[in-house]
Structures are given as C-alpha cells and as structure tokens.
Image 1 (cartoon, one colour):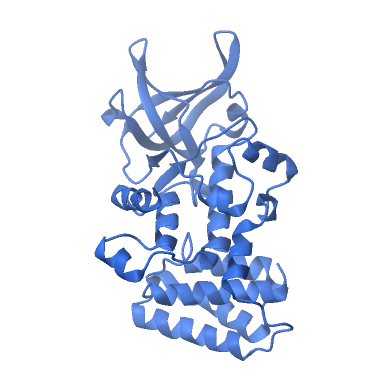
Image 2 (image 1 turned 180 degrees about the horizontal axis):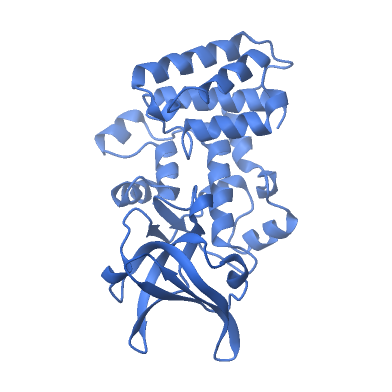
Length: 313
C-alpha cells in the first residue's frame, strides 16, 4: 500500500467511525486491532506525527474500546486533523468513479490471495473484491453460547471449550480422517473430521480449543462431526462471536476465507456508497449499505444478520 493509499484508507475509516457515532464499529475487530495492524504493516506510509498519535493509542489502559464516546471523538478528531495538515505527494481522487474502481479490482489485490487462490475463488463466481463482498455466508456458528460437555444434546449445533486429550489419524471406511477427544472438566467428548487427516497434526494433546458444530450419536456416544475449531490462543475473527461459514470448493479453507473477508471489509467498506435515498432507508427501517455488508459477514447477533440479508436481498 502506498503512502497516500494508507492515508486515504485511514482517513475514510476515521470519518466512518464518526458517522457511526464513535461506536467502535467502523472496522471489523475494532479500532484497536486496526491501528495495531496499520502501524505494523504500513509504518513507512504514515506521516510521523500521525504514526505517533496512533502508537499512543496502545499506551492507554483499555485502549479505544475502553473509552467513553467523548474521548473517542476527541482522539478521532485529533487524528483527522493531523492527517489533513500533512502534505501529500499527490492528492488522491475521491470521486465516485475512483471509489468504484476499488471494488472492481481483481481479488488478487487482496493481501494473501495468490493466483492459485483466485482460481479456486473463481469457481464460486468471485473475480473482484466486489464479488467477494457479496459472497455471503450460508450459515453462522454460534461461538457466543458455550455448553458443558454434560449439557450437549444430539441433533443441534453446539459449542464447547476444552482441552485436547487425544488426537490421531483414524480411518472412516476406506478413507483417513482425524479423531480427537476434548475434555472441558465436566466430561469428555469425541470429535471426528472426515477426510481431514491433516487436522491431527494441528490438534495436539494439551491444546485448548473451542469447537462448534453438529452433535450426533454414534454407538450410544455423543460425537461432534467435522466441527469448526480454533486454538484459544489464536482466536480472533474466528471465535467469541457469530462466525460466518462460507461456501467452499477444493483448495479453500474456512479459516482462511474468514481472514480474507475481514481484510476485504477493512479495505473496501470506505469505498461503498449508499444508492438508496436516505429517506427511503429510514422509512423502511433498513440498514445502510455499509452496515449491511459488515453485519452480513460478521454480525453482532442473529437479528442483525437477518436485517443485513434483508437489505442485500
């Protein structure tokens, strides 16, 4: 990302934060996470006074998330003031045409997506960043409600946090997969991943994980069948919330898709413009377009996910 690109994206996100009444909702994961990422990846693209202002955020106890609305407003206003008083090498265009160009960029413009990944995504009809933003989840995993092993019921998607006590490659029919046992203190539950022997290499005894997915009964015992899972130490866009589950094809993986989508939202949300009249949006009780796209992918709750889908239908 060039110097001016980094400045423009930061300014748009700060402006959007103001439009959202400083609710820490302008970027997925919150302002603290975004600022840490921006400083680490774009340190050379941020003017020194602005960089210092960003770095100062991490030194405050609780960070942006812990501040009240007025303190957030002052910090955002100061950052915008510093940004706008720094000379730019070239004034970037902010026309509608320029913003639309951002969305029309090929999917390989997203950091981490290479040509081979793009070929896999093309099978899902994704060629541009705009295509990707409109690849909506087909369901969500509820990582917000945790059950004890002793509370599990068959026939439902449920979530457990526990420690891996055993993990190994096992055969299901004539195909290899992974079998593991997770103990949460109240009991132990079996989990299997069909046709995914590689999971056994990533799940090691002693790892603390969260798993979520359908619970079935096999030979009188409860078992998670091919659940989503995540190491607790590495949780981020994957855990602690409603987690999107995207359509996949060979060569695409659930975690990577969520990471890519989180990046795409951070980059593209400032370029999305509302096309419906404000009066219509308010009269019909619709989400604005930016909020709808964010909430469709990483919703605050199922009600917001439903409103987002209604808006994007």
